[in-house]
Length: 156
Image (cartoon, rainbow, N blue to C red; front, side):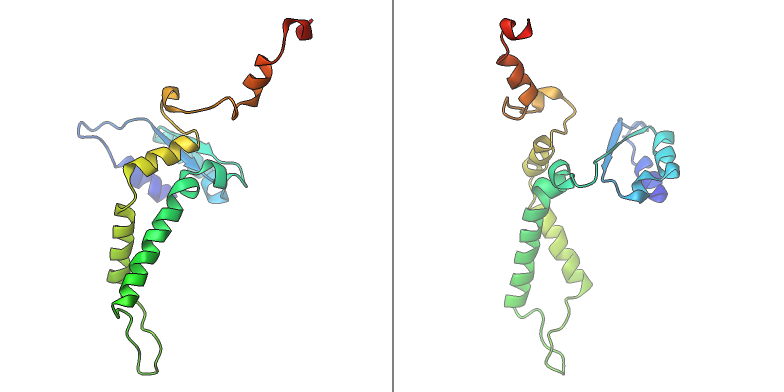
């Protein structure tokens, strides 16, 4: 994790500066180590942790990106198989795909994920750098709905 933070810190804008960063992680213990949190702090990263059991609700990849990516990857594999890509070993078993083929499948599968899907995945998790972009309906915010239904008589 610490080497990853160093790698991220080297990604700077053309003028040598870096925009503020927020890292959102699940509650895996390796993300929560004191030394890891301190390293993020040293490099001016804000760290947010998704509580255990909530990644399927709060993590953009789980909410909206993984399924279309895996669907695309599955299509790549099916095309490779349909075109005889696997072939057979002398024993009659299917050959494994070459690492270069798999890398190509992953690259093409990711390229098919549109910017709109990525942006909407963050919005659906209510992660945004501006509150104006969030679409929070009254149905999602029960506290506000309840407040609207309280009359002055109820308060007294």
